[in-house]
Length: 602
Image 1 (cartoon, rainbow, N blue to C red):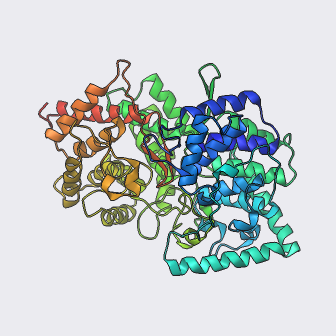
Image 2 (cartoon, rainbow, N blue to C red):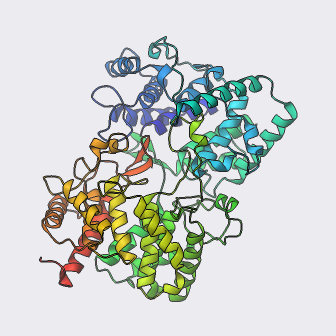
Image 3 (cartoon, one colour):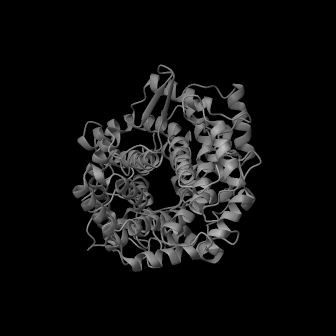
């Protein structure tokens, strides 16, 4: 969403590197995404979002738009009606504070001394999810420096004058009040920190940040830690021509997309080449492309070269586990993830004939690493093990986005599918049966009462269910298993009248949207993949396949403006541009294979 583009302009203003051409093109993109009611949303077709609208309005005003222009007046009226600057989230108010538009004293405190806490102390940085700790560490440095930069832009018209309500933590009120008291104590300490301890903490934080910069100049390959790390290092005296800063700013350019001959400029939330390549391989092979075709052989070689063989933050809790997995980005070696690794193994297993020795060795390392990342309850998280303490969620500072990485149904399902596939392919010796059994048991307990599964990294219950059913079947469950029957019944009950499936992202906050929304190619394909694995060749499948065929464009692709990828449930979503292609191809390919095998009725 446009917060990234707005914050990019604010970052350039903060660093003193604003460029009129960049500002104009980014402002065009922000204007183009303004809704009819004058606001901005966090996903296509979504409701207004106050903080997003404030940041977009601010960026446009910085670009020269007058507050008297109709589109600006429209936005300002909504902001004031929705709570004004006083109602924005912490991250937005941090940006306001950096330009003197909000008091640092009125922001929650996270001191840099946090990085000194040993791993056994509650609320040490490894209690936060990988993406959160990479963001929080530099923000502690920013908060310690409390920068205030002069700005030609004021936002008085967006204030209501009302006192900001006490932050309502996402937890029990009693625990929340305790953390509010802790925040007040931190404010007192911030006025007179222990100087030697503060200097030590700042130095440790600086080393921690620099050591985690990726080869492409990013931090985690995502915008928040990247931007705040740049700001933190800038405040610590790193000039823009320092190697670490130069690499960071040059890396941001590789996440920048220019369109319409330079008229529009936007920033990508992330890049997903490993994930996309694995999904594309699975889709093409399932659709009948020979694994030895040159394109797929090149894909296999590229995936093998992307294997991560160094230790990252995951090793803090698994110090004796050997590396062997894949990450999401081009250069994200410190943060391989279980989800990508499972999908890459499924892809390489289909390409084994390309290079059997090398692929078998990589798959073996990946399986050992993945199994070693199993959480205590049997499920699997994305980046870490047992990263599920509730304490970070109680902090007043953490009012936006997921800040921990507990196991999820969709990631666990992908691991179960991977292990089940290897076992059925005659590679049972590669699989720890106890790990598989515990994962299946955990996945079973996560099934919702209506038969669906929650989707942490995709929207939402259609995604979770579309992953869980094929996983259970791959692990040996019968197509008549009660879990499978319940899931299929739920999918059939939420099929749209047009034959497709869709789920609005508001399902993360409102159960009424669960499994309900405009039909999309990717979500329809997810539902079909579940029905296909369960051998439900009935009216629901026929209608779903028909909808996909009818919606296909002349060039072979599908349209999908909706966001069906999830970054942070309730807060941040992603439109994966390849989802609209790879998942329909996979579903249609498996459907044709089933018909040829005599499983369906045609």
